[in-house]
Amino acid sequence: MSLSEPQQRMQRQVTNPVLFRGWMLAKLPAALFAGVGVQALAADRCATTVPYGWRSQNPFKSTYFAALAMAAELSTGALVLFHTSDTPFSTLIVGMSATFGKKATATTTFTCAQGAAVATAVAEALASGEARTIVLDTVGTLADGAEVARFTFTWSVKPKSKRE
Image (cartoon, rainbow, N blue to C red; front, side, top):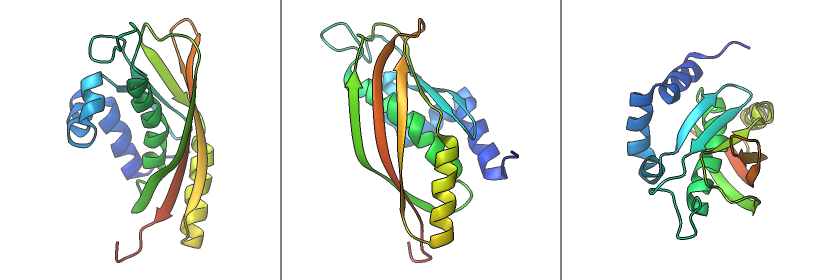
């Protein structure tokens, strides 16, 4: 699959540390402070990380659930932004759930591999002009593969009208 120019631009922006930090400072300063980053972004998947450290730690000596949630959301949100970058879209999280397993005491990587489902929902929304919802799962793991958390985000995507 060849990427459009806006998709290529977004991919460059999130993989360039300087450009990404500038974007995070403007759009997600709390995530920047916590150290959230994008490890990989492609049409089919996105992987984000959140380090364990003083900026993301809770009093129980593990990564604070809000820091985990920021990285989890970004792993799904970056896919949504990637697939809506060609046309102005309204995007909104309309639901979220999470389960937590192992204590996060090291860098946690969240991976969402549902890019094809996002592309389908965006194409349907463009064709109909109506909002579509998409349920995206992301799993946070430690380097040894142990599952820390599992988040489910429900996104609404709708092409912007000329008035928006």
